[in-house]
Length: 196
Image (tube, rainbow, N blue to C red):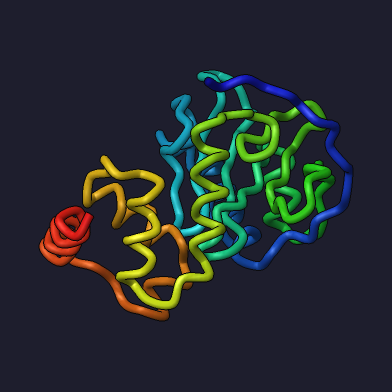
């Protein structure tokens, strides 16, 4: 069951990384050109490898963007900027932005408003939290097979694709032990189930 317990956010100043400045320069050019991507409301018409977003409502000038500050890390920055804000940033006239972060240690999510909801910290989901605890406990496993064996003790009915997704989500595991193919995972799950 999912419930919310919205915790207070802590204000701080964040420097605009160079890739964000470049991205906002491109957005500014689209605004100057009247490009359809910046005149049509959408949450993802404007995209880059590390960010996406769009105009909040037709006829408005407020944009919302999601920025991924680190590759392979789920933390995001949620930015709300007017066309005027984007122009100032694109012209290097503003180097920082006031953002609010969670008070939960280790949470790297940042928000444009102090009343934002953090999916990771403010949403209480018993299943997700249990899975997170299990996956953290599996970090001490010594091999791929041991990891899958321990995983199946907690989630015996898990589909092989779900297991692969959770394994790959632990970013260090594929780097250390390599990735599974679906056929490899199916064979391993069958063998481990048969071993009982």
